[in-house]
Image (tube, rainbow, N blue to C red):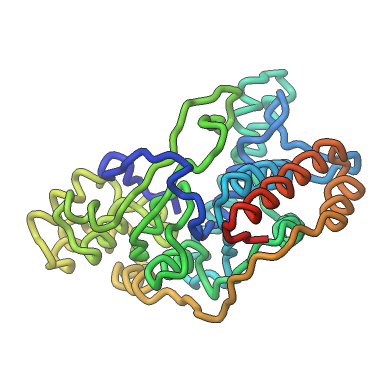
Length: 345
């Protein structure tokens, strides 16, 4: 969803070493879309293999995941299941945005406007079923567990942190918080920098730890009130939120009316903004999102032949780079075993 909560959130910078040995549940779709929008060629187009198939997501996934494994992080990848019915309008809106971006991209290409090409190309990112399945093949070959969420992936990661299965949820979005995620980690990257979407520029970043209880205490809100604030600002189920209502204005409304949510939505003229959608339906969708306990976390040995077959033979990755990274992982794993530490391969 990408909630517009940045200016309200209490966060703490941490080092990756603080996460060593901890189970981290990754919002996989969020991660793969990051790679699709940032790992691009000079004109902003996605990277492809000799057959024209997109490889940006696989390059990012293999590089980032193995780097984090080298740091001793126990990664779990959670994928989206069936989206709530009210999310269909969001898909329609996103499709429209991508269509408009595609038209503008074509105009930029015809005009030779490279800067505009970079900007609009990033907005046309599409993660197909085939691309998702190939990503899962890479994850499984690395010996890492995959969980298929019954609904929203971020809701499942939030549930795993709540029940103690995972230490934290990994995502760039703040959505996990409204699903009650106790601990969210953002900017989880070894490089200490992040590429700006649509641009060939980088910004320095450090991992951030966001604790739900500290956020609620800082804002003096309950979780239900935070959900209402999210709906006012805009969620995946009501993109754009209520016209003219930003995070600060929404917060003022909650301070004024407290738990009288009905009054708040009357005040902002919800029905005029969303004549065919009740705010309570959005609220209940978030509160009652489906999650599952039907999973088993098991870290296995790396399937080196499988990775070579997929990445090198199928998609044309450099065999030297792939094997070099895998050799380093095996070496680190061997050292961990000798030192008496638990291995997760």
